[in-house]
Length: 399
Ligand SMILES: Cc1cc2nc3c(=O)[nH]c(=O)nc-3n(C[C@H](O)[C@H](O)[C@H](O)COP(=O)(O)OP(=O)(O)OC[C@H]3O[C@@H](n4cnc5c(N)ncnc54)[C@H](O)[C@@H]3O)c2cc1C
Image (cartoon, rainbow, N blue to C red; front, side, top):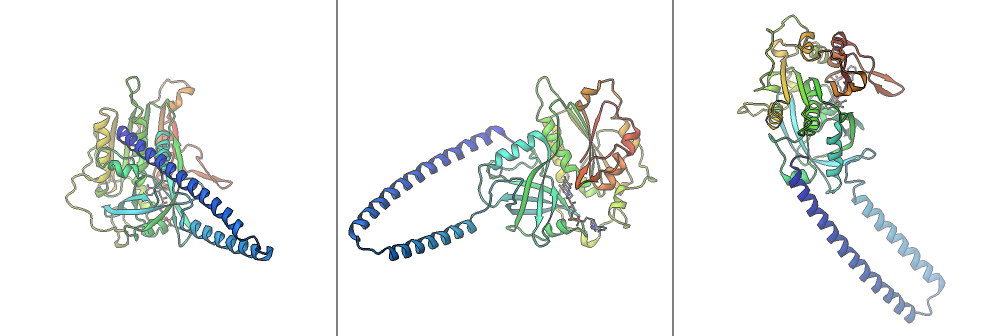
C-alpha cells in the first residue's frame, strides 16, 4: 500500500519462498509414495494368507485413524488466513494506544501468515472507502471499523506492511457493546474480522471531493484522501477538502484550519450532544476514558496523518477543524464556500463528490438520514443543509 517498490520487493521474495516450499513438498510426496508402494508390494508378498475379515478390520481401523487425524488437523488449521467477506479471519491485537481521552489506535496483524492479504487490501485501497466488520464473540454481534491508510507520518515498517498489519482509530462508546469490548482487550488477544466491505467506490473521473466528517468519520476521510490523491499524475491533480468536526480538542490537537473562519457561533447546537445523550457534549465521563494519553504530543495522531498527506500532495488537500469544546460548529456558510454550483453537465457529476461520514445525527443534519428498506440500508433522499445549498454538479454520498 505504502512504498510500492519495497512492498513489491517483499512480495517477490515471498513468492520465491512459496515456490521453494512447493518444490520440497513435491519431493517428499514422491519419495513417500514410492516407499509406500514398495512396502505394500513386499507386504502382499510376505502375507499371502491374511483372511478377508482381518483385512477389513485393518482397513476400518486405518480409516478411523485417518479420519481422526484429519479432524484434528482441520481443528488446528484456520478457516482462512486471508481476509475475505464470507468467513471471519483471526487477527491478533499488537497494541492499543490511547490517542485522546476517548479513543485509541488499534494495531492488528493476521494471526496466521497469508500471502493473499496484500492483494485484498491493495484492491480495496484502490477502490475508495472500505471497512471491515469486527466480531464480538460472546454476544455474536458485529460492528464496522475503518482501516487507516499508511502515510509517511506513522508508516508501518515494510515487514509490518508485508505481514498484513491494519490500524484503526476507534472511539469507546461508554454504553456501546463492541467498542467497549475492544477497549478491554490486551495485546495478544484475538479479534475476528470479515471484509473488505466497499463503502464507497470513488469513480476514476473524480477530480474534487468535499469530505464532511464528524468524530471517527475522519477515518474514511483519510481513506478517501489517500485513495484519490494516489491517482495524481502530470495530467491529473485531484483535490480534497476535509471539514472535520470533533467533540474534544484532544482528538485534533495541533490541527490548524486552512480556511480563515468566522468567530465561534456559540448559539449553534452540537450534533454530538444528541448522539451522546444529555450530558455536555464536551465533557468526558469516567466510563468513556481509554487510559492516559501521552502528553508530549504536539499533534494528535490523526492530525499527523493529515499533515503527512498535505506534505506528500502539496496544494491538493486542505483541512478545516471545528470543535464542540470551542463552540465551533459546521454551518451552511462553511459548506457554501466549497459547494459552488457549476455549469458542468449531468454526466460529469462524479467529477465532484461530497462525502458525509459520522454519527447518525451528524449525517442527518448534513444530508438527511439514511433509510432502511427490506433489510438494506439505503441512501435516502438528500436533505439537510447540503440540500439547502442546492449542490448542482456534485454527487452526494452518505457513509
Ligand atoms: C462503515 C462504518 C465504518 C465505521 N468506522 C468506525 C471507525 O473507524 N471507528 C469507530 O470508532 N467507529 C466506526 N464506526 C462505528 C462503529 O461501527 C460502531 O457503530 C461504534 O463503535 C459503536 O458500536 P458499539 O457496539 O460500541 O455500540 P452499540 O452497542 O451499537 O451502541 C451505540 C449507542 O447506541 C445506544 N443504544 C444501543 N441500543 C440502544 C437502544 N435500544 N436504545 C437506545 N440507545 C441504544 C448505546 O447506548 C450506545 O450509546 C463505523 C461505522 C460504519 C457504519
